[in-house]
Image (cartoon, one colour):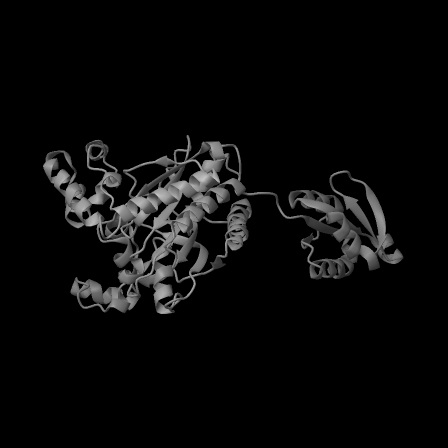
Length: 436
């Protein structure tokens, strides 16, 4: 029997309604802030992700799914090396959304010189070759935003405010959410800080894992994010970025916090927060849910150098992403659900000889935008009523020989079981009025 790949899930029924609700809420909220939707390809050149996410990250080194055609795979197996591949032949499934959006912004010149900032949001599947576990899938879904061309710290604060409002609209108790923020510095102050952290790691090399020693060469700040508990203990004594910010970064960070304070958004400063991707600069943030056991359910930050890394002109940028599956698990822990109510439905029931009348009635109702179901298996009326209950129908339209002969329909309220007869000519209007 064909089976889904481990670490993936089928979205259908209530779970699909939950994902649709998340995207719908995102569109409404982010749209009010001026964000338009974008969709980029699920498959990109490997370089798109390596440039931005960083070679030292676990995402690039261990988790990114590579994509090859059958013919190309045969060539690779024969040669035993990728050295002969062109850039356009080195492909990967997207492990996150930002790099692809920035690639699109560079390719299509979203932000020409002197233009207003561009704001986009997405709701898409992402792919990572992780060991499947609670809240970590190989195909997962994210809603995210990217804001290109804005360097004002007010933009950082507005993104965070919008993110926290999003969680509120999705049903979270705000008192259970912890927003952690930090500043990672920029090109002016971070190089010196990186050297300080590298020296610290080398001074404690006997206590650090092999991955962290490798990270020390490529990006020592990644060691703050190591999953090894001993490394985490050691790194708690490492120099802190907030003690080594330049004046501009310190001022930027202070203004972001001042805006959050003005908006009444609670936060915890975490000077060890570095996020999992290399492209971040200055403001970074994450949100966790107390007692959920799923880790961060969303986060983001500023990435002012990413456009250049992808081949574009210097352009500031920032954004965030929210994980659908993790958010659903966290809400479940709070006794809530993302699913929402099933859409209102009308069921048209009939005796076998009145099947043609049902076809006409369902056609008219559906053309009026009413979600309508009917029997297509020759069930008895009693069975059709049971099926109407299973479908969650709020109304049932009954068509028997007497109704058809009189040009009427019996309208049955499925919750109260009250019945009234209405002329067929006014059935659609009566049904819409009752559903409203």
